[in-house]
Image 1 (spheres, helix red, strand yellow):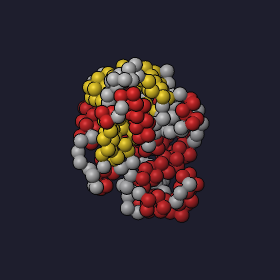
Image 2 (tube, rainbow, N blue to C red):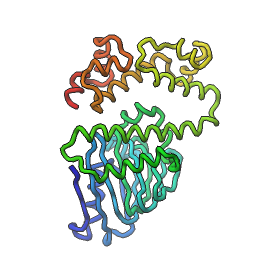
Image 3 (cartoon, rainbow, N blue to C red):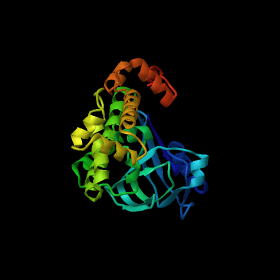
Image 4 (cartoon, one colour):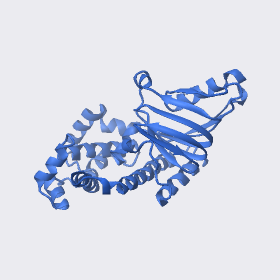
Length: 311
């Protein structure tokens, strides 16, 4: 169901406060300011797509800031994806800055402070649960406030899909909403992986090995016999070298495999991509269902059966 808000029905002196509260209630707590409150006029339409939230905003120039105080009093770890349909903005986070023009896609992270100075004639905002994006791109937070290559065909497809998702009627069609939401995150993941691939030439050989090993693990996650020896053989190095590279990042290859398997199973259950718990377990490399259920509950505080029923 789509909900539409407009400042046209609000007294002039209260319009900006009303609109700011509406945006924060649907997205993330942050402070906002505007140069002219009296003549402020804006619209905001919002809809749910599975467990994503998609909104279209049109407004005059205004400024958002999420500070460490907001992180303490209003914790939120979702990612926000912004498509500037018309207008411009300036986004700053984690020491990175970008000017966002029409057609540009930007990612920012509610778990960290940011500033966002916008003058959008039309901007689409997509709120994405953190675990769902990090399952696909574990290093996604490194690409916030960074220009994503809009010349790439996948970026164009992502932007087009966001535009279509903002206007199509999905009311009452839960069977459409969930796969559409998953498709949006999958497209964003491909865009971010393309961005990652474009920067690998600047990485050290050990960092390249670490990333290639993780890519190999993700590709063969469903293989219950995946181990350090197979990873090492695929990268043409010794098992000891692979172990040392992962140790430099505070983990072990097997721990990383098990963590990814849990994340993949959780994502499959949350996004409705499986009909049974056994599917979530066996399709992601778990061979013992009882063990899977125990470690899943320990990691997420809920049994996989309960999560499946809930979704």
